[in-house]
Length: 605
Image 1: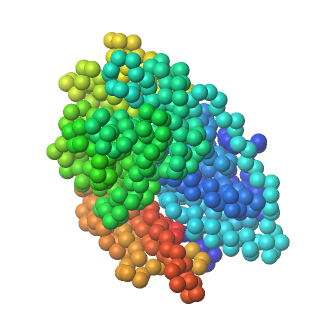
Image 2: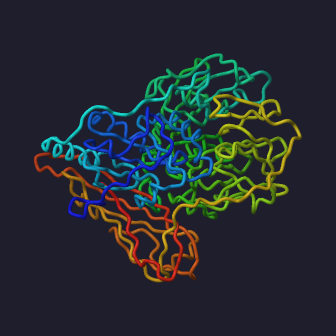
Image 3: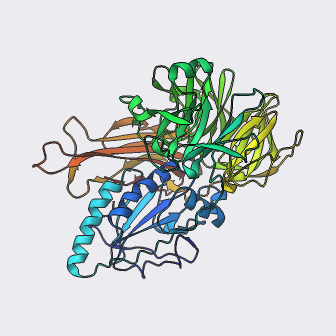
């Protein structure tokens, strides 16, 4: 973290480019006298979406003095598009100006290493602090209050004239629908239930996916009662289980980080599952499971007798028994990456779509652009996908096939798996019998969910706000496209000993909370694992000596999680408020002669 005791650094200016939520392009020079907060984000990143939520409090509390600007810094090729950024800005309720930086120019100018990263700039145009990760809003609020007081006293603070101008919302019966299920299974008749995410409701439609018969939820974004917040996944419980539970549909209430139980007979939301409370005391190798789970999909898995939850925000698959209320971890160690084998030691990256096939539960591991499955033996397997930074649109043998951030799955009648290949705008098919990938349809606007209706595949075309049937029976195509790789700036390091440090300075008015032991923790791993010859594991403290192994040119990713606990430093308060700062980094590195033997990251309280 840059502090006032260090050399002042002038904040780099915006280049020319595309702006959203403003009437005209902005510049830091024109914003002199205002406190400015830059949010480096990308819309594929669940952690970035959590930060957008956290920023609402700063927008409310400092609307006259603070200008927040989202710097969209894409990971995937699809995210470079102005059209896609505009849709994401609307979809996720971004309430501040957004600049699209498709070539990561500002990312490099500000030496950003991870999504999300926040940069605080004072009214003179100098960088005050820079920190990555979630949970930063309260610490930033203290810094912003301090800047406002100092510059107000000096007479150089500017108030009012916030440049934010929201775009007109999309109109229609559905708004950014996410996923859909058929109520009543394959019985004659029936209806579809659609997660109408942008309207914060569920829409029950005829099987045409167009005619809305009724809605579930008030439509007011919020928590509790009949309110939902960006619902995504849906699953219908077996009749016997539903009778015990008192509801028959389970909803992934994503932005509330909860599950909701719906009684479809009278369209009422009658039950709430606090997943974080259910995981109290449960830890992974990176520490206690964070509360911001972002459940993205749910599916009833008869082979295990529970609901499987794709907890995208924490890179885990969870299990929940609606009869007992028990919540458990089925797969994942809390590390963002791709690693198969024993499920609780495995690495996942924003699992976002589920499909059950006997003893397997398939999942779209979106940030890995992968199709994977968990079996009843507790083992993770990958059918398609290489890792966090490898993607594309390529058909053929599964070992060389590529997806781009898939979000939805369905099991087809022949046992193959249909994949909503979201950022490729395509529907793909993986055949386990031949281990081949093919393309069924293209030209779709961010397809995110799939459901079979009388043998026909219905696609939730999220960014087009509709359900469509783009696949003709027997229609296949083969796309021999390029395999792509995220060209995020790589940190060159020397093989051998590496000094890793993560400085942490509590914000004004706080101190480290060491009442019950060490206040800090550091977890380190690598992919491939052999890149890290020594220093892997979890320990207290925020510095560690690592040993990197490999020849010059060897590339990989260091996975680093740091956390620090701090409390309000006021002797007059008997029970001060306490805060946990935590950040996960996936740092791409390349071993090079003359590379650095030091790696320094920053954690803001």
